[in-house]
Length: 430
Image (cartoon, rainbow, N blue to C red):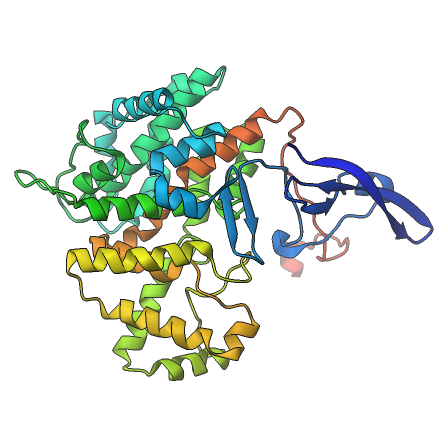
């Protein structure tokens, strides 16, 4: 079932009256099609931050922020978290349907085939300073990888796309682990073809020569769950960036590299880092939780891990991660005071009318950082982990834009508020 435009509404602008088509989605979302507004009236709309603007029609992810609903291709995130694996979920997003056994086996084989980096790329890591941010390395290396695979730079058919998608999903974890190893002065660890996707990443992150890291099944499950919960989230900042770059005709690697850069920002992919820094600050200051929240109410501090641009109730991903945090920390024997502080913060905030009235409910970032920290993932790698998880979503949205026969290059308008026409003044008269 696809979105349709069967009704119209009237818009009056002075002495002009025009019909605007009403577009209705499969979940009864309703929007006004203003694509001909400027041509018919000379007006444009102004929507800072695009909070009320639909940039596209999409069949990938559905969010109902008021009721805390998240579905990938129609399947509730709770069911995927309970039953699926990251690679199966990735194929659901990319293909539109859950894979059968043959498709899943074939794609896993492709991931194994493409897990290695060309040896020439290993020299690239030596060119970065040891304190280079892993997100900068990740973005640069995704583009560098494409130089070694010109055969998948253009998508003449589905085979090329499948190969490009498998390369990106497989190599992004290899690049990420290698960036970490380079930053701590350790040798880059090669992937193992006998390991699953998540086990392989943990192996490359934490193994050292002559001492292999043996991933715990519960830790592997927690990592898979983390990646599933981050695999897509509709038209967020980084996904919209990928689609905007894709609209120019840019290839999959360039578009996803741009997505990494957008995700880097602390308001987007860096929020779970900000949560841990906030909790550590409260701990170091020996500040009572109610005192910190008082400072938040007085706008003297920020409250990270609560509230969301879309969700006006609980973020469904936060509920899932809260449960897995208890399991992982218990299994690893980790006593993390920041987890206790996060629980206390949640309890206090949820019983405070100031935060409830403003829909400041826990979001996915409140517990995701604590889980990554328990696994031994360093703080500067948190956003990289987000990027690994989000890669299937970016690929799915890139393909949706690429396959759109009526797609146009994205080119937003603006309301100019600068100086009126004026004359150039020679430098000696300024």
